[in-house]
Length: 367
Ligand SMILES: CC(C)(COP(=O)(O)OP(=O)(O)OC[C@H]1O[C@@H](n2cnc3c(N)ncnc32)[C@H](O)[C@@H]1OP(=O)(O)O)[C@@H](O)C(=O)NCCC(=O)NCCS
Image 1 (cartoon, rainbow, N blue to C red):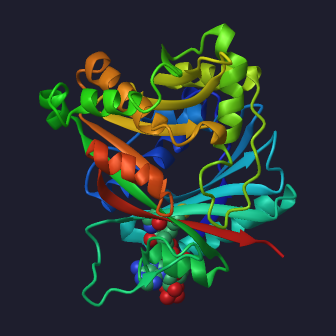
Image 2: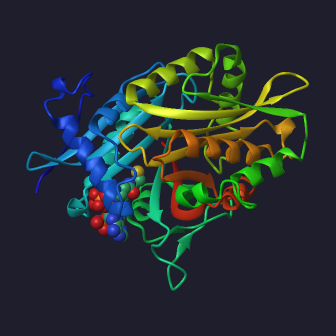
């Protein structure tokens, strides 16, 4: 069957799309669902459309593959516009029933050409495998140069990536925390309250927690922009050629506006250093309106000069306690951490997170 590749213009609204964007979004959801065996990462077409709109920070390209006229695969390219001007980030998804026909290979060629025509020489990507996939019994794992974590060598994404000139530069752990257990134990000795107050006792009186929902208060936005800037390069990057992102107050506001349009809500907890009055760390929980049960643990950062006071645990435990109260219908929290980020992983394990997936970080430098 002939496979054709084309760029799909990203419509401003669904009315203008002629249905193709919705069909491409359905492919994304079907691939996620087949990979994980659940629909937690499903996004509604309206959410996907808003997330694909160009912003001052990112241009996006959508390519699709058709078989007999029907969209069977997607390729997305996300192209930073403000910083990281040599790089672009790609994702390819092929419906399970249409695999091993060269579709991903053809989409990759299309995407590489799109990246190269914009002067992008470094392509980055992530691919996922279930944690309950192949185990130690004979399965071979690829280990990145960091030496931390492993990714199944026979996973289709790994075979395709290596064959296409990508290097494995990092492995992340996907972890999940079931909130039901915590609801019963928030005040118990090993519950979140105890973890938070135990962490707060490490540097009594020197730091205070502040919280907001959605919009950062005006008087904190400059400090918050600095934290977001540091967050782009302070966590372990493995072999990724990631450069610092340029965050300022305008970018914070732009991101908050997009979140409002998409319908995501976020709980932010930040920590203030009492001597200087500046924010020195933050953590973000986020969820989509269409999937209230599913929460994403996004950024957690403590500035280098303020590490070693258990502020990471304090921030995370406090924000999770907020989520239990403010989002009573939330059921699970997902997070992704580099396998070499032992400090953050230890905090997560103490909070009750358990491994749920392996994520491989891939990078290719175009000739
Ligand atoms: C990875 C994925 C995109 C491959 O799509 P595809 O259209 O089947 O890939 P292709 O047909 O172009 O395969 C190209 C080569 O990759 C390798 N490959 C692909 N699937 C494989 C599998 N299941 N087992 C072993 N090798 C595989 C083979 O070398 C294949 O060439 P061959 O068929 O001539 O032997 C698809 O499995 C998928 O959508 N997975 C989920 C999402 C994902 O991981 N995306 C990649 C990261 S963004």
